[in-house]
Image 1 (cartoon, rainbow, N blue to C red):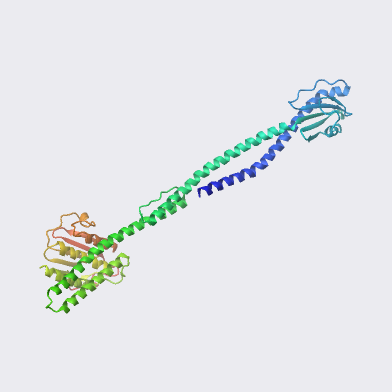
Image 2 (tube, rainbow, N blue to C red; image 1 turned 90 degrees about the vertical axis):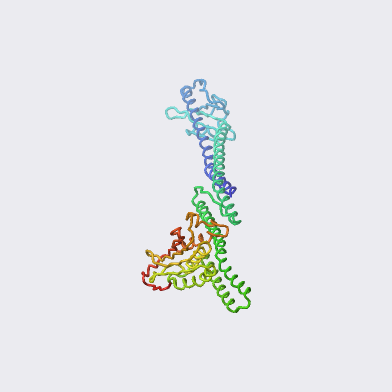
Length: 440
């Protein structure tokens, strides 16, 4: 690209100089010849003024005026006889034309000749011939052409330098963009192309930077989501494993009950995986259908009630009688609620309470337990990979991201007793009281 830009610039400048320089060079030749003729006519006129009176009286001619070096001045009478000067003995065509009363000029093989008539009272009484070498004309033309050639070379050099600079200005950013695109294809999403002031190139650089940022963000979110999803799947897998192990430990009991329970747990695990994949692909459920709050609470009782009972703890589910519909997707709500209850089971004490209520154009879910309280700041509590080594904090970070992605909020309402509140935006098409709930 650099060579093409420089080559095109040089070709254009050479053509432009040729289009203007060739006619100008010819004009220089014509101007120099015309100037030399005028100069020879001046010399001849001075000589004619000196010898005119003597030619009338047929007196000897005085010395002729000095002429420029290389210029010969010759005087002829009206019969064509040479009276003075070093010119030809016999009159040539220019002299004969001058004796006829005409100013004549001609460029011979080696000289430029001008002849003028000498008149008195309207009669031609002689002629003066002035001749100069053509080499003088050629010298002036050569000097002018050399100056023009020097200017042309100077102009071409300037064009070459400017073309190289412009080529570097255009090619360097494109080379950087090509290198950035190559690195981006290899997985380096930290590439960043600089702005160079060329709108078209800046537009490409901006688009590439934006693509790199989006890919980097997408990859980071995919990696984080994969890690968080694996954390979310540990609990149902652990429950399924416990049920199967319990069935092996007590082979005398009805195996059918254990298998049925395990199948139900596997179904819940499968649904959890489907919900996580749907959320990862941003495939939200239709917000036109309100969340089935009773079904969700019933599922919480089924999944977590037995587990808490095995731990010697209780689960308490409470809901207001009238609740607004919410635009939050059922999948996201299920995952957030699962994270909060699992957090209370794993890190809390005593009874776990899940309370659903109306809160200022929102549907609020409070999850609390009777633990000693949370002492870490909320910013640390919801930060990913914070907390204990067993994964505590990963689920909370995932839950907060899911809540915010649905337009809701998740926060620690009170540290003691630890209470988390999940706020889901209420549907604008429903008013409080649309959904009747009597579940305790």
